[in-house]
Amino acid sequence: MALILKFCIDLFAILLLALGIKGLSKVRSAREANRLAAVAMAIAVFGVLIGSFGSLLESPEAWVWIILGSALGGSLGAFTAQSVAMTAMPETVALFNGCGGMSSLLVALAVRLFPATDSSSGVIETVSIVISVFVGSITFTGSIVAMAKLKGWLSTPAWMQSKIRHFINIVLSVLSFVAIVSLIGGSDNELWLLVASSALLGIGVTLPIGGADMPVVISLLNSYSGVAAAAAGFVVGSQLLIVAGAMVGAAGLILTQVMCNGMNRSLVSVLFGGAIGSTSSGENNSTEYVNITSCSVEECALTLEAAERVVIVPGYGLAVAQAQHTLREVTRALEGNGIDVIYAIHPVAGRMPGHMNVLLAEADVPYEQLKEMDIVNPEFPATDVVLVLGANDVVNPQAKNDPTSPLFGMPVLDVQEARTVFVIKRGMSSGYSGIKNDLFDLANTSMVFGDAKKVLGDLLLELKELGISAKG
Image 1 (cartoon, one colour):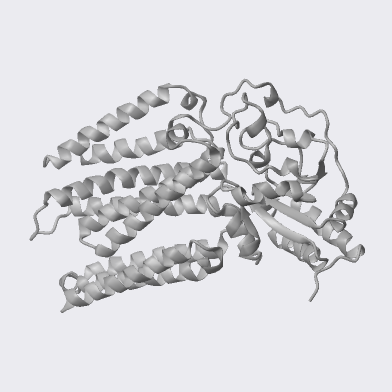
Image 2 (image 1 turned 180 degrees about the vertical axis):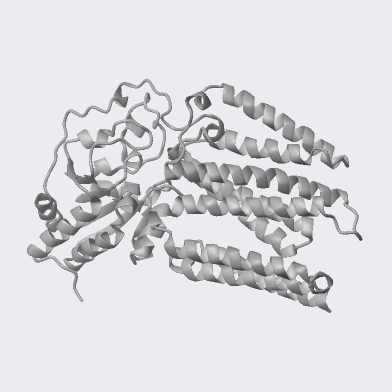
């Protein structure tokens, strides 16, 4: 009876989880979909307890570990969700990916080191344990490295940009392969060799990757965590883990491909070629500018007042300044004056997939106003004003005009084709590629220097003095 009840609970949880993941595809439904997926996981935990109730009765001390683990994990999760800032969301996602990988690793180690007395390890279970250990270790260490790099705690050592890193990673891969073959053959002596070699491999692969490639890395690690979870599902006989892990793994791979296409990069070049801009010999890589035009907030406001169509290009600088709410007030004022406002979203803007979508959704920006790069690029020639907020590499014309540029071939937003471009930046620093942005030197581009939140606040005041304010 308990097994039938557990099967029904798992099936219901799987259906809820599938609906939750489907809802995450749209910003409008993402919040409720996330809650639905959380409910599915809670139901799944209840199903596991129902299925193991008989065994738990024989081991009362197990309840202590279950209660302590649930209380500790739940408290840390709730605290993180309440306290993390939007600017720290990319590294938080990387940390969560790492936690998923570590969970699968610990489950596999527990089953291998403490097998049930009434069970024998079959080939499928052994292979599943090996996959959980291998992928889980890589996911955990790779995610921790990614988090540390995003936080600025860790930088890429100079020797990691040389070819010696490939030799080290090959050696670690060979050691992992030897351990995997031995474990499948029935030996337990190489278990910790597999843990150590795969953990070091996760560090070796992730450490050389630069910030420009981080959206790809995060989505790939997300896929890894799903694969590890699916393998752990085979280990413990959980249909829910198998289905959920497979869905997350497949979704992560698809998203990784989308990110690679958005940067005109192959996954192989991201993992083994180092960061964008790590080496380049193009003449335009100099950070010296010769034709910079700066303007005041008042001039920007006057130009916006006369515009009929305005495109907003958000970037990581907007997130750093926490200026999304102020930006929304500015766009409401423009819309109240009959000005058409849309947001141009580059697929790799920010530090994680969908970063800008999440940021703008937090400020209640209508989903219909968010336009993908392929849709908005043909519309720039008919645009009066483009407002660039903290974006850099994704609006750099070098990607189309300079074959010597490390960005060449990367799809970018063609903001330079608009009549007027205003770039709000603190200074003339380069993006993650480390090269100058030719957009700043163009005759139709004006720089508005300052913190994005303060500049937008001053711009809102200027618009109100011009009689432009949100209506209703």
